[in-house]
Length: 73
Image (cartoon, rainbow, N blue to C red):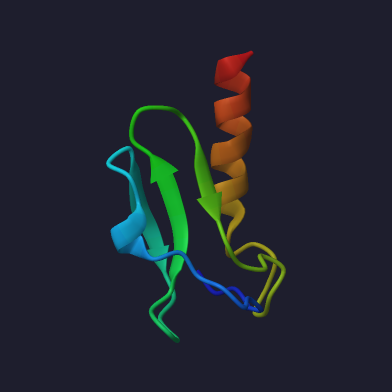
């Protein structure tokens, strides 16, 4: 996926506790862009999903979020 970046900080992967794992990394600067919990249905992504070439590049992340919310209700 392609997303724009505008962040002044980044998470050090070595600082993640065992229950978190890296899922996405920037090809531009190698920073960590996504994490997920291994023991619970939770994840995070740092980036602007509306970036060029289009808003559908990260649709899978939104689909996953909606699915997790449906399963939790």
